[in-house]
Length: 402
Ligand SMILES: *[C@@H]1O[C@H](CO)[C@@H](O)[C@H](O)[C@H]1NC(C)=O
Ligand SMILES: *[C@@H]1O[C@H](CO)[C@@H](O)[C@H](O)[C@H]1NC(C)=O
Ligand SMILES: *[C@@H]1O[C@H](CO)[C@@H](O)[C@H](O)[C@H]1NC(C)=O
Ligand SMILES: *[C@@H]1O[C@H](CO)[C@@H](O)[C@H](O)[C@H]1NC(C)=O
Ligand SMILES: *[C@@H]1O[C@H](CO)[C@@H](O)[C@H](O)[C@H]1NC(C)=O
Ligand SMILES: *[C@@H]1O[C@H](CO)[C@@H](O)[C@H](O)[C@H]1NC(C)=O
Ligand SMILES: *[C@@H]1O[C@H](CO)[C@@H](O)[C@H](O)[C@H]1NC(C)=O
Ligand SMILES: *[C@@H]1O[C@H](CO)[C@@H](O)[C@H](O)[C@H]1NC(C)=O
Ligand SMILES: *[C@@H]1O[C@H](CO)[C@@H](O)[C@H](O)[C@H]1NC(C)=O
Image (cartoon, rainbow, N blue to C red):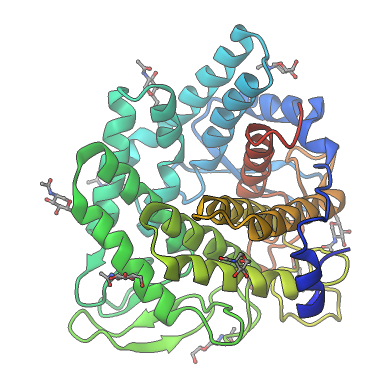
């Protein structure tokens, strides 16, 4: 069961509620085995993105696809897991080798790609490499070049980085997902000291905060479109993958929770924290009683609306990040921190119970890639990535064991 409505919200804010345990599947040998099998099954030149709906086998895509960073990043996450779980050195080294091997086909994208703002997602494995080896030139170059690619999409008139290219050159589309890609600007600014990159991220986030979040409990539009490079009024707000232009697509809401929590982490601007809280409140209070994340919070119930386990896992990570920000306040907001921590854990349990699928190649099923395109009921590579990452973060925090 999940927390619903304002009265239960205040009840849950009572920090005496105990933290439930994470789902045991998150640390099962089967998880490790499946990731290893996928890593060894091909020559790492095509990347898994989502599965078919029946057998749950991965479908593979060219490197120049917005999702190609997630599988190598999952392998780096398994290296981290090997360290956290004290698996032997040889084991850890093997994961690192696989992560590096799977990053190689991404390197040429530094100088030529068609993923638009999603260079931030492509940078994930290189950002992980720098945690391990801060002097790795390949990774430094990848991060800096992906960041300058994103920065080159910034319009000082609009105040945002352009998300998607469109045939009409005066269209300037900005989608909520872009909040996730700002991280590469901060990482590159950290490496180079180039403060312009930070300023671009802040400007983009401020505009998104103003234009993408609705007053009614902070749900999002995706994408909205800004008029021209000369005149920056918003001319249209609509959805790309949601149920309707007025509805709340759950994955967009989850990207926003994570994205604004991350902006607060980098800047300390309280408006970002408030925005992340409002977006989290919308997400949590619109969940059905079984806690399963629907692909769109406003999609009709009949026929039954498919879930999106990837939205659930992104939200889990967003809520955990938000929880850490509450804890970082001075004085620490322990009540808020444990509220979001508990909410994340419950969301993780409920949606793992639904979506864990031992016989599939993906870890999780019940993902919705794009329902208007009929792409639902699949495994999704970023759902799996955020699932593994949540497991690592819980280990780091000492609230789970291997
Ligand atoms: C590392 O050790 C874990 C735990 O024993 C095991 O499940 C996994 O298969 C090993 N991984 C590799 C890459 O050898
Ligand atoms: C640097 O990282 C890349 C992947 O980004 C990897 O292929 C390479 O082996 C690494 N080099 C060193 C010296 O660690
Ligand atoms: C960039 O990549 C596209 C295909 O992904 C290719 O058609 C194009 O020729 C490449 N451009 C350059 C300058 O390499
Ligand atoms: C900082 O980054 C911006 C955006 O990529 C770029 O235009 C500028 O040249 C960079 N500044 C320096 C000193 O490298
Ligand atoms: C962005 O928003 C923050 C928080 O509201 C504010 O402090 C800052 O001045 C704004 N920066 C820009 C460039 O708009
Ligand atoms: C959203 O609005 C646009 C422009 O009015 C329209 O073309 C589109 O069909 C609408 N989308 C949905 C999902 O209703
Ligand atoms: C979850 O996926 C299974 C098939 O793998 C499907 O039968 C079930 O209806 C899905 N549930 C939801 C809530 O999407
Ligand atoms: C603590 O967090 C909760 C949940 O976000 C929030 O409602 C409350 O205002 C916060 N308290 C303080 C003192 O910041
Ligand atoms: C799920 O996708 C199928 C096509 O693959 C589509 O026919 C169906 O309407 C979708 N389900 C719902 C409830 O939207």
